[in-house]
Image 1 (cartoon, rainbow, N blue to C red):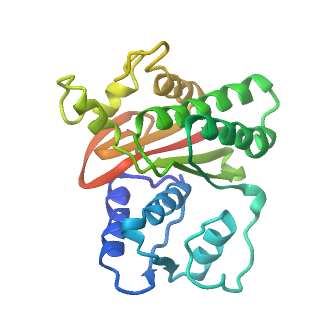
Image 2 (tube, one colour; image 1 turned 90 degrees about the vertical axis):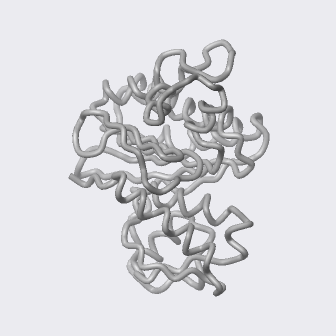
Length: 265
């Protein structure tokens, strides 16, 4: 099964941030060999952080990786894309970056869902499409409401036709779910923050329908027999190697919140 977003891989990807901070060149040369959507959105948000980036660009050692990142829409690549056979862009849900006021992000998101998502979902039933779309909107709205990020949200995905599923990754460079909940002083244990946030009606905000976005997402994924991972600060919650949800504590700190979905169709 092509499924390797694990606590170990998340801990290794955070090394890129350390390398970027210590980089003295105009580009960060990297031997990274995995470019699943969750890596693409991580790189996009990381290089948008001006204090870290210092106008440095990303240069992958592997030409295939360079080609893929160029095609999917990465803005922070060093040099021209090397001559290499193009990937099938019909299989890509290209990288998108949304930022601005809540109203502006809402407009950008609805346009993206209409143009890039709804029309290409390989489903015959409109009810299924609408359910997927509503859950994607809930994730983005949740990020806008809770992240406290000035750097917006990055999104991208990939279809895997032979396996009959697609992946979507969402990442914001904000405060993170555990930090947000800790600030609300709910008295939870270190490993319980993300799981708590996915419970029905669990929210740090006293608003109508607050705390329903991640709850609906979790239940939709269960019904779909899909997988999800939510990574934030020192916590990893979701599916790793089986259909059972697991909580892991990361050794490396992970900025913001990353949500990765595998949806079957």
